[in-house]
Length: 131
Image 1 (cartoon, rainbow, N blue to C red):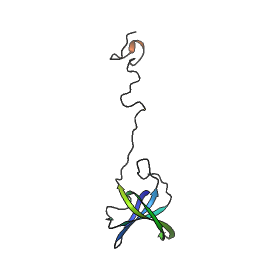
Image 2 (cartoon, rainbow, N blue to C red):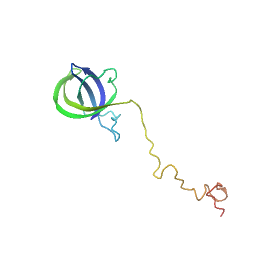
Image 3 (cartoon, rainbow, N blue to C red):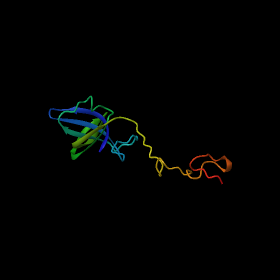
Image 4 (cartoon, helix red, strand yellow):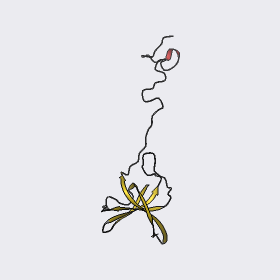
Protein backbone atom coordinates (compact mmCIF):
# COMPACT_ATOMS: atom_id res chain seq x y z
CA UNK A 1 0.00 0.00 0.00
CA UNK A 2 1.39 3.40 -0.83
CA UNK A 3 0.92 6.85 -2.24
CA UNK A 4 1.60 10.55 -1.69
CA UNK A 5 1.71 12.08 1.78
CA UNK A 6 -0.90 14.78 2.44
CA UNK A 7 0.13 15.52 6.04
CA UNK A 8 1.86 14.01 9.05
CA UNK A 9 0.50 14.55 12.54
CA UNK A 10 2.24 13.49 15.77
CA UNK A 11 0.44 12.60 19.00
CA UNK A 12 1.75 11.60 22.43
CA UNK A 13 2.78 8.04 21.49
CA UNK A 14 2.05 7.70 17.77
CA UNK A 15 2.21 9.45 14.41
CA UNK A 16 -0.45 9.49 11.72
CA UNK A 17 0.26 9.96 8.02
CA UNK A 18 -2.62 10.85 5.71
CA UNK A 19 -1.89 9.36 2.28
CA UNK A 20 -3.47 9.65 -1.17
CA UNK A 21 -3.47 6.02 -2.32
CA UNK A 22 -1.65 5.18 -5.58
CA UNK A 23 -1.06 1.90 -7.38
CA UNK A 24 2.46 0.52 -6.99
CA UNK A 25 4.68 -0.34 -9.94
CA UNK A 26 6.82 -3.49 -10.27
CA UNK A 27 9.52 -1.93 -8.10
CA UNK A 28 7.13 -0.94 -5.29
CA UNK A 29 7.24 2.76 -6.19
CA UNK A 30 3.90 4.63 -6.13
CA UNK A 31 2.51 5.43 -9.57
CA UNK A 32 2.72 8.94 -11.03
CA UNK A 33 -0.67 8.65 -12.74
CA UNK A 34 -3.51 10.98 -11.77
CA UNK A 35 -5.55 8.03 -10.58
CA UNK A 36 -6.37 7.10 -6.99
CA UNK A 37 -8.66 4.81 -5.05
CA UNK A 38 -9.01 7.33 -2.22
CA UNK A 39 -7.14 8.17 0.95
CA UNK A 40 -6.08 6.29 4.05
CA UNK A 41 -4.12 6.89 7.25
CA UNK A 42 -0.97 5.05 8.31
CA UNK A 43 -0.58 4.86 12.11
CA UNK A 44 2.97 4.32 13.36
CA UNK A 45 4.16 4.07 16.96
CA UNK A 46 6.67 6.74 17.94
CA UNK A 47 7.58 10.07 16.39
CA UNK A 48 7.92 10.90 12.68
CA UNK A 49 9.39 14.30 11.87
CA UNK A 50 6.83 16.20 9.75
CA UNK A 51 9.63 18.03 7.90
CA UNK A 52 11.00 14.73 6.63
CA UNK A 53 7.64 12.95 6.25
CA UNK A 54 6.29 16.02 4.47
CA UNK A 55 3.53 16.76 2.00
CA UNK A 56 4.22 15.51 -1.52
CA UNK A 57 6.71 12.77 -0.55
CA UNK A 58 6.08 9.20 -1.70
CA UNK A 59 5.58 6.51 0.93
CA UNK A 60 4.82 2.79 0.94
CA UNK A 61 4.06 0.57 3.88
CA UNK A 62 2.75 -2.72 5.13
CA UNK A 63 0.50 -3.26 8.10
CA UNK A 64 -2.83 -4.34 9.50
CA UNK A 65 -6.20 -2.67 8.91
CA UNK A 66 -7.53 -1.30 12.22
CA UNK A 67 -10.94 0.04 11.23
CA UNK A 68 -11.95 3.45 9.92
CA UNK A 69 -12.42 7.01 11.11
CA UNK A 70 -14.49 9.89 9.75
CA UNK A 71 -12.63 13.05 8.82
CA UNK A 72 -13.00 15.96 6.43
CA UNK A 73 -11.53 16.79 3.05
CA UNK A 74 -12.39 20.47 2.57
CA UNK A 75 -16.06 20.56 3.63
CA UNK A 76 -16.87 16.95 2.76
CA UNK A 77 -16.99 14.13 5.30
CA UNK A 78 -14.67 11.27 4.37
CA UNK A 79 -14.23 7.77 5.85
CA UNK A 80 -10.49 7.07 6.23
CA UNK A 81 -9.32 3.44 6.52
CA UNK A 82 -6.76 3.16 9.35
CA UNK A 83 -3.65 1.04 8.75
CA UNK A 84 -1.39 0.21 11.67
CA UNK A 85 1.97 0.26 9.91
CA UNK A 86 4.50 -2.43 10.69
CA UNK A 87 6.93 -1.09 8.08
CA UNK A 88 7.15 2.25 6.24
CA UNK A 89 9.42 3.29 3.37
CA UNK A 90 9.90 6.90 2.37
CA UNK A 91 10.92 7.20 -1.29
CA UNK A 92 13.06 9.79 -2.99
CA UNK A 93 11.01 11.99 -5.31
CA UNK A 94 12.66 11.48 -8.66
CA UNK A 95 11.72 10.85 -12.24
CA UNK A 96 12.94 7.49 -13.34
CA UNK A 97 12.87 5.79 -16.67
CA UNK A 98 14.46 2.47 -17.31
CA UNK A 99 15.92 1.44 -20.63
CA UNK A 100 15.55 -2.28 -20.87
CA UNK A 101 17.76 -2.57 -23.93
CA UNK A 102 17.25 -4.89 -26.84
CA UNK A 103 16.16 -8.46 -26.41
CA UNK A 104 19.58 -9.72 -27.45
CA UNK A 105 21.65 -7.63 -25.07
CA UNK A 106 24.09 -4.76 -25.51
CA UNK A 107 26.67 -6.70 -27.58
CA UNK A 108 24.27 -7.96 -30.23
CA UNK A 109 25.34 -6.93 -33.72
CA UNK A 110 23.06 -8.45 -36.37
CA UNK A 111 25.46 -7.65 -39.26
CA UNK A 112 28.73 -8.42 -37.50
CA UNK A 113 29.75 -11.26 -39.85
CA UNK A 114 28.36 -9.70 -43.01
CA UNK A 115 29.56 -6.11 -42.89
CA UNK A 116 27.34 -3.08 -43.29
CA UNK A 117 26.05 -1.70 -46.55
CA UNK A 118 25.70 -3.40 -49.92
CA UNK A 119 28.08 -4.60 -52.64
CA UNK A 120 31.27 -2.56 -52.99
CA UNK A 121 30.07 -0.10 -50.39
CA UNK A 122 30.44 -2.49 -47.49
CA UNK A 123 32.40 -1.35 -44.46
CA UNK A 124 35.70 -3.09 -43.97
CA UNK A 125 36.35 -4.79 -40.67
CA UNK A 126 36.24 -8.13 -38.93
CA UNK A 127 33.01 -9.06 -40.63
CA UNK A 128 34.09 -8.18 -44.18
CA UNK A 129 33.74 -10.86 -46.88
CA UNK A 130 35.10 -9.77 -50.30
CA UNK A 131 32.54 -11.50 -52.58
